[in-house]
Length: 488
Image (cartoon, rainbow, N blue to C red; front, side, top):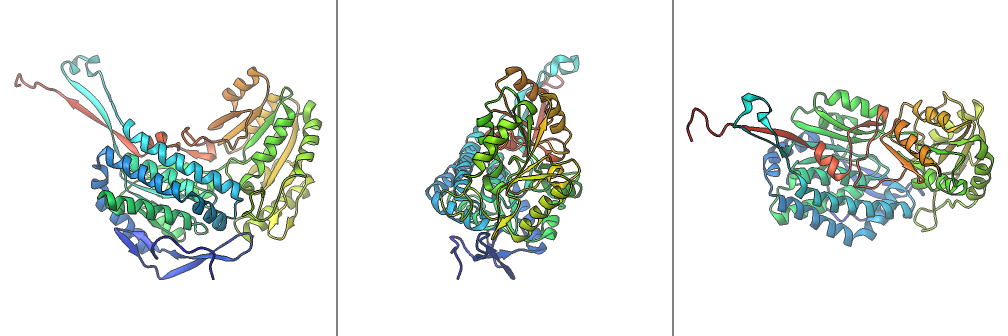
């Protein structure tokens, strides 16, 4: 018996139909280990078939009228909105994230679909003054944005529906066919979304191969990203895999969102209680499985004791347990291997001199929300991305030292500062080497309409519908001499 009965056909949506796979795999509910559903598993042959089909419809998708692309997204938005409760429950089951986080994911998915539809009408170019040189006298110049071609989108397990929407919706807005590859552990919600998109496409007379989905192992991903016929790869996942994809895909363009070890700075002017509340809210949402969840907390020494006191009081109130319950804040990680890794990282940090202030162990399948103090450099849990319910605290002498510590990381996605000083706020914006600086809110704050992405090992390129549409298009310059040789 499974916990979910799919609302879409069997197999994988490749070409204009659904193709049966020779293999299936169980998708398990992380909290109990029960089977949610049996999911189709693709292979390299299916991946190539998906690219073949995408190339075949590339011209047709690129020439879709703006009104059709916008209507495609608007109708999909309406259907997903009507089924939002079912999507939330499915996301709880396949990701194991608390219900509160899955509700946020569906709401953000809807915003992404809606705003991508609006971007269709903003896809335009500009005129260029060619006559700045005498050779351009009498000439007309303008540029337009044209679809880059086939998009390959590869998503992570933690926010499968939202991450897929951030790749599919801008691709449609830009006029690009897209092939999505999901994380092996979480294909179900994305399969449902793709089914909806393809049904809407069919009703509008659009080739269903404009949106396809494959699953499978690294060989499937390699087949997709190395095909010379694609235009761009948009990947969300680990830095190690992202670096490999960038090399394998070259010279094709890549957009990479590769995670971080996000920092929260608390200066001597901050509302310390609010900062401690943010540390809990921003450190443990999605059970810590978010690339901009707080991992490092840097507190200026003169407020460090007060911060620790507030944090200790708040940690005692964090609710762990069944993610299907509305009050649950932290639950099981995606699989037992992830749990084992995070616990090992905690042990190594303690062996290197860190002190456990809260948690540090597991209850059944769940890691208890953990606070580590005085974690040294050179250990995984400070230097790399933990992707679990763990925050690390250090006291720093001043804000300059905090900035230096943030910038010493090889990552640079988002960071935040709690302060009452306008001077310090603008200093953070100027000095922190990250893609986004958040003042008096968690570093995990993301509006889906803003440019989102990182620097250094946190990636390249930007998401958010407007900015992803720009990534998924190329400029084409038009240069016209209306009267050549005096002929009209």
